[in-house]
Image 1 (tube, helix red, strand yellow):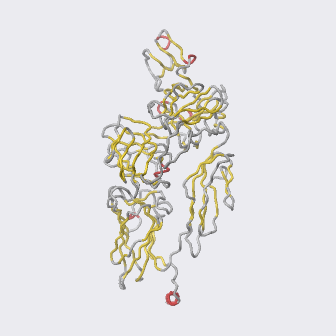
Image 2 (image 1 turned 180 degrees about the horizontal axis):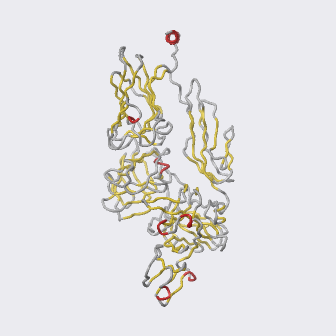
Image 3 (image 1 turned 30 degrees about the vertical axis):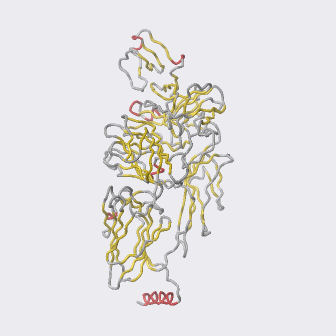
Length: 621
């Protein structure tokens, strides 16, 4: 009783002196006791939720601006409700929360709400409770019909809240190269001049000292963070970004079991080098798990999300990938797949969208792109609207989309596709490559592009490519080392049987990966210690590739057990290389041989045509 009286007197003294008393939190929730796919009511009987155009549930993301996990309140009427016991307190309160969009309507029972104010992702609402009220009911409803909302760090308090520390790196990721003169590192914004502690999650890749200076050590990926522990005036806060470090040495380092990688690592000058100035919204917003904050893949899995979304920080464009009326949905670190019934929603807030180009890297099933407004020509949209909803016709198949390029009426001009790109070839005279643009190798001398069209008996068969669509993985051969100029083109061509996977934006790849429910083995280009020639070796551990690279995917069902495969070396044969094709005049010569077609499938009885026989490409007559 004495302690309670003293607190009351302190508060009274503070008010008489014209100052406010310290923050007294009545209720708060940051979802730290929840895991992915939980619903709020699972851990608290005072909570309830409703689904709208999707499921209101927990996600392991931090899109609202707090820390993971957070609550997704589903579009089209999804809601979260909390019954808050006041503990005998009445009068003036403040309700605060964080959200990635201003689409939440707050209502209250047993209380009066004031006008909502917004600062970035932070929202505050005055709350008045009359004497005698023991509890209030707060409901947060997503009234938007198209987009979900992420919701976090909700709090009801009296007094003066601690201020947000205000730390920011201004970006979620950055790629740099060891020894490069033009590396630009993010600068920590610390407007309140607060003491922070810097950290690198992998100090074998890069270190950061007390002053925030970064030292690059080896190729790889690390997370750079700055942490403020909090004080009487400011909330604790930790901010971070992912730093990808590329090597400056041709060859990309040692390949376990395979030696030095020829051109398959991060080659200086190996990226897209446009031939002129660009004014742009961006190279195109990458539709991948880094953008959406989730990764999911497979055929009709039970845990398929209703929708995922993200916002491009530079342009403010919001992209939502929604299951809609479809049963399929697919996301991984390279693409999304737009099936019949799905929706790809691109919105720009207060601005109008005047053009959209979708970077389609494959069309399985002759799908036709459609839009709710404007005109569609192939994979290009034109019109004038704040939001465009894309879909495809019903039936089997899907569009594979890697990026979306958006033109805004009052925003920056769209990207100008360069007339050419530059590919650098080291002394090993080969390189792995992929580009964000369609490339045309037709008529070029001294350099050629190849796709992987078949395999069998430790042989990878490559076929010459001419027009190479954006995102396609290719093997590049050259007559001599140096820089080669390859023109871009508006034409497009798809390589359905290509076993190479392009990484125009780079990324981390696992030794084995699941694609559409099928297991694939990942192989990396390296120099064979036995032959001294380039060959493909199975990855022994996850590998981070720089921009404009590719790797090889082989279906595990057509290979021995992985423990055997990982010690194999897959040599390279070229389809138009005369020494790589032997002609067999008599079919009987191949009857007892190991015969595979160019897709890598074993053939019990071969007909006339081109096959791989005992590891050699053979024309059976």
